[in-house]
Length: 230
Ligand SMILES: Nc1ncnc2c1ncn2[C@@H]1O[C@H](COP(=O)(O)OP(=O)(O)O)[C@@H](O)[C@H]1O
Ligand SMILES: [Mg+2]
Image 1 (tube, rainbow, N blue to C red):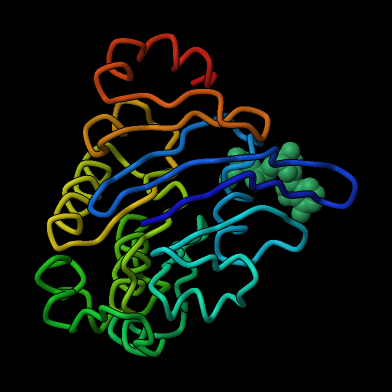
Image 2 (cartoon, rainbow, N blue to C red; image 1 turned 30 degrees about the horizontal axis):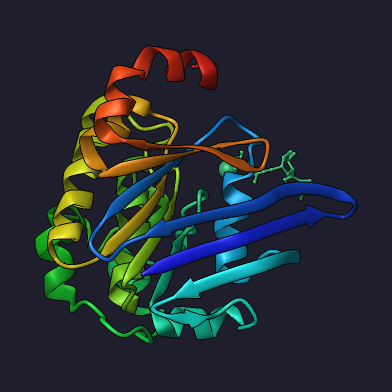
């Protein structure tokens, strides 16, 4: 579904991604793990066409989208859930969900959203400012599904959330996968990553240094935790 080939990116003169190549097949949940500053956010932003200077191929559903504007990538079904969650503070949950146009190929109905995110149904009249971190994260995910994404690019959705809420986000992601959506997930929580994903890439200093199956991730959990400095 997604193929990245030789992706490099720069901030001014500083190169932060070096010939990154990876693939995600339809229906998978794949994580990208790496230390702070490794280039994870830059990688997602480059896939969306939101990063200024980059080169390489981003192929989505068999088409090279690397020259395309962000809105065209969204229309094809790429969905970006940024690390700041991007919730509109003054709008209610339901307004946040219905404001962005459903431009992607598989837009979810509000009913489908509320089935998968019952907490958002309960909170549908609440303004963005009144939501907990976990609720904001659910809203950010739900909004992109409502817009019609086929592939979610999620930037550290569990960051700063309590263990109970992290578990809830995990079960939501598995449910989303059951409904035919593919997920590429940036995750620092190695333990959580194994419980939710099918396989993993390790990014270090702008390079993919390992590709790990779930069983390898499990066997090397302590080593990886140490490496990530957690
Ligand atoms: N706006 C910016 N200007 C210059 N350098 C930046 C900027 N944003 C990030 N960087 C640098 O790019 C590298 C990768 O950052 P980022 O993609 O945010 O990493 P990660 O998401 O893995 O923490 C880091 O070394 C960071 O310092
Ligand atoms: Mg980041």
